[in-house]
Image: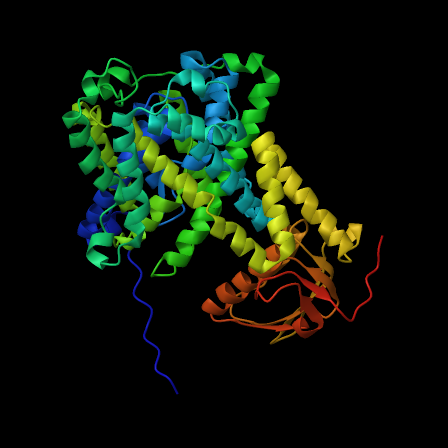
Length: 537
């Protein structure tokens, strides 16, 4: 009989948690602040907002959202994944200051929607979107970020990039290289090399140093040494400004006159922001050494409240951000107060150190964002999708293609539509795709769950609502003998249910998998029933 080490005692929450874990949370908050500072500036600038507003967003995400948050370790702040949406909104509302102000109006309403999502417990809607389409959307966002930041990294003449879409910008990279600014490009190139190469470092102590901090340590002195401040062209150094002078009420609702544009970006900000945030909270729960379970709906409310305040003051939309949250866990953050302290440090920097921030080369910020974009769109994402099943890579690529030529909503819809067609071709009935056939039989010591027809992303919410009603600590048998088809998204959800339910003292037995043939060797690949004849409706 093996001896199991007890799970570490969970840190207290609230002000008792603050007292017990002050040193750990201040330390983690400081390291996250070093990571968040340059990224917040870069994300704001790339979104068409004043760079300072990126820091304002992260300050509110830290100091305000902490008191409403449903997650213990997630860090709130502006996200690279929303750059494409926010920049598009600013542009379609006329660009410049008016585009910024009208976009803030969209954000206020989207923040209110996120609060309502949480109040009505719609956090589970994240399960409605197939994982391959979500990853395809994020990869497309990564490509767009790279396309838009390369001209800034190389400081090419604006007329070479103005008015071009993502595909045109990517195709123009050779032309950009021919017209690069050698001085700025050296700083940008070295900064990008640091960002990409730092992940190869194996030393555990060195790995604790955030790569963006190393970029600043190099880029600020290099920019001064090479005289970037004296270059007559504008845009080579960040223009931050004084927080006290710049803060105020900037939101305007004039964009409501452009109903189609307003509604388009309202849906995208609320939908993509919520989706990214919920996925991050799920991921952070898996990293939490204390295995605490976040309240996704409460976290949506926190994000919504903070987004409304951020928009009123001129800031960007925020999410629970994965890279900063991962850094928080890695640095030993214990409670939500690490997020609070990261906001406090950002407030101090924006208030007291803004002259130093205005010495940061824009090429260095572009390098950081390009590194984020490369990570989102890395070829290994496609390889991973293909390992799960060829159809997953098709959905992944379809989502990317339509996102690049149209927008995020069209891309996501195209990916989901293709997946539905694939389900029908594999034997799922049209009725079964959208309506779950699930029954639960309960006896004194056993709960039997039967799923018939199809278990796919479009009907999983109904399946999940039934599974959520099962009391903890029971013996559960999940019967899949009468299931025609299970897709990858639901296979991942079943695995998560088995893991979560077992962690709280219950047992889960899955029967019928042997007659469900996987489409690939991946354990979470889609599975088709090889014994039961499908019934089409």
